[in-house]
Image (tube, rainbow, N blue to C red):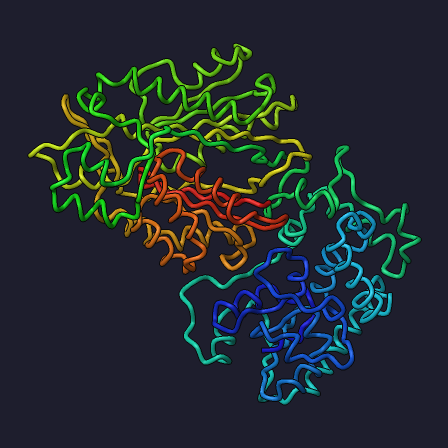
Length: 606
């Protein structure tokens, strides 16, 4: 499939739609900006320009389709290489196309000097400047009438060159139907990916709204015919906002903004630090079965053996099991406090810089809270804000960050500290003859652990940016996850249908969240799925059409730590960093599932 339409005619939407329909991978010009190893780029000299004597079959061997400027400039040569290929000419109202192009692609010419700090991005923008603005448009794109003449001339040329029976003239507003008819495939039941609006375009490049606006104004004033020498140091140079470097070089990691319109002074939280702490004792499933008196229980042996957990950290011994839930409160809270101190110390942060502490745990029968105790332990400012969440469990990560982030915008430069601590040992009880099967299931997967996270609002902070977040509570699911406790017994009760209840709603929730941010699932580089249990991961994988590789980190965390409750997804984030080494500009989606049933979603950009 050859896309012959100019950029800003819906080519990003077409790329994602073709991939969804099975005609991918699809090459788009913006893929040249990707630094992850998952895309196989066309050689630098071939990215945008029509280059003579290219072996297109070799150059595009990894792809099933191509769209945007490459196809627009080289569709004739591509048709010679693939005589039976179909051509899709994306069209748009010429005036709307020009305004969109001027406010996005062409405005990047004003950032060329700042982009030079990043060799990869600078090379791509230089190629665009040379082959599109000075090649296709002859250095006259700022002449609106001339640019529209070139746009219309290209449309006529495609119509005259491509046989009518192999050409689809396509407006992205038409949605799935014309593409599905062309490819002879059924229409998907998912929303059509209307993508890459102006805010989303600048967000993908890591440019703040303030810098984007200045770039648009500068490019319009300078004109596309201005030389690099004229732009350097002149009115077209853009790269500083509020005293911080926010151009394509530093901005890609330090200035990424939400894809939705945001205020110029809005602070985007950065996860500047993440550490874990857990009990030294790592127990195998066989050892836990013995401790709980379930080593001869056939049902327990089956559940423990197929739940995806191999070993987990627990503060569990016979002495603890001999006490009631109430009787072990002081011991368990001291254990949680010790883990919290260990995790915070590993952050190596000056505690005087912390403006807010937000902590959470399922286990909190006593007081004072972890947040209160940490302020006392580290001799922090007594006026430091402190909050503690109870009962949010596995969905805690998103609300914790949402609650902690406001301190970053108060103008003081203070940071926020998040503590997610869990002691499932505090809820586990030895088996009895009256045990329900729900208790056995709950005993099979949960572990102890703690995560400490540092949020920083400074533009220079390193780490993934939290671009957006949302929590959705599924109606009529309050009994799906609950703590059942009596005077002598306690356990975390899970209904058997929990994975399916969550999976049934996930696709719609995730699609709506990504669409709100100008994205689709195809544009997520790293999936961070809650390791709630083997069936939870499987249902999420099926609902979101994820590969085994997409969820491998979640399976690893589940196998080696179990479901650690409140800090679980932080374990996945930590392991993703260790195993995947996310690259600058890549995006991740956090998906948590917890009591309620509540689904948390959080969009990250490294």
